[in-house]
Amino acid sequence: QVQLMESGGGLVQAGGSLRLSCAASGSTISAYAVGWFRQAPGKEREFVAGITRSGGTSSYADSVKGRFTISRDNAKNTVYLLMNKLKPEDTADYHCAARLAFVFSTDPGNFGSWGQGTQVTVSS
Image (cartoon, rainbow, N blue to C red; front, side, top):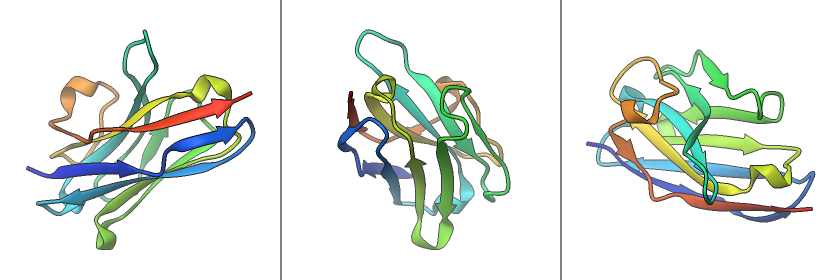
């Protein structure tokens, strides 16, 4: 089972950018489809972005489309989430998740491995 660790979160002003990293260990990330999810206080965990095992296909929640970009570097065993034009409503705890499959899912219940999360706070 792959272990995941997120990094790159922090405090940023609205309109700013952050790049989150999801580093894998214990197994090669190239065998897994990966998703990014976020959870704000009092809200359910929601899908943000996903990428297939090969990196050939990605998908985004409507709320982040055009602002966020998911990518992966299988040689570095890492998946990234570049977040531009951040808004206060993007404030949440961000988690990456992996599933041993070619395609990702928007349902968090379909992922078997999760990282601890990294906090993103966007000030207005």
